[in-house]
Length: 177
Image 1 (tube, rainbow, N blue to C red):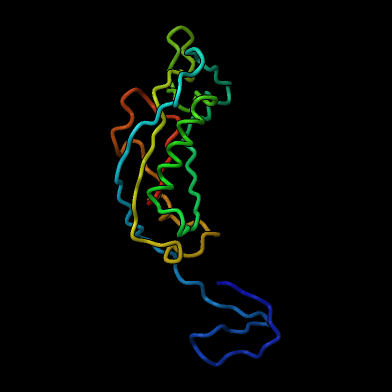
Image 2 (spheres, rainbow, N blue to C red):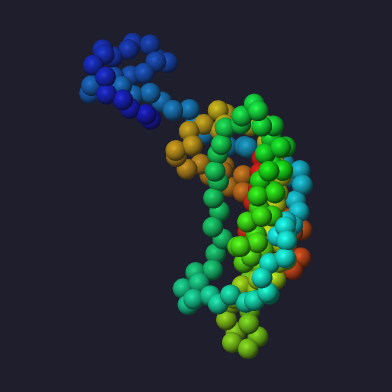
């Protein structure tokens, strides 16, 4: 329920906002539950030119214990001058460029045979890039301020596709077109 203070009198109409103790309250529509996301293409993206020498990146004790995926979803309204497929290509090109200085994002998590500790093998094996589609618009999804369990459907699960041939991917970017 969304409430805004007003000095107006209570409405008698059932579908309009109500006035409770000097505060105007309006029911927010329930969040959309079925987002119907379809994966169009999934691939590995590699640095656009040779990175520094191959190396292993040490992980701290905290990194050893707190080893979990962080999934984030960012929403951006479309722009008529930039068709979704063009945006997906530009993001893929940018990812290829960023993988040069941030080569660990194209690496893999592995166990060091000598120490038994997890580390990042900066091997340039690639980051995941997924292009997906949905019939839903931002307006249909509803209020983006509040968490919605259906948003989990927007995040690709790496076990759902064949990107992880060389071990656990450290970075997957998904674009909805």
